[in-house]
Image (cartoon, rainbow, N blue to C red):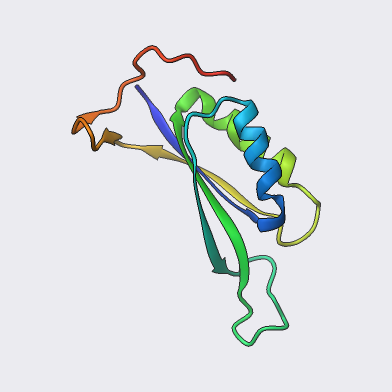
Length: 112
């Protein structure tokens, strides 16, 4: 099975809306962490210029990645600097720690 990792860095105020969208798509698992940094947008009111955003990471089948990325962008888009970024990366191998075996699709149905 061919896998991808979708990573999105988004405004924290958009997180709840993105989570709802991903749940409506029956995405089987996501990880969310709070991150600090700057890119296109800088917080000029702080000496280090850092902004707080949320990072969303999703491991999925390759055929789901583009749809997930587009959905995140559709929900997170405000049209302003600081909206964030989305990246789709190839996954060389994905293991389940519980079984110590490479992940397989197991015939699960995924909504797209």
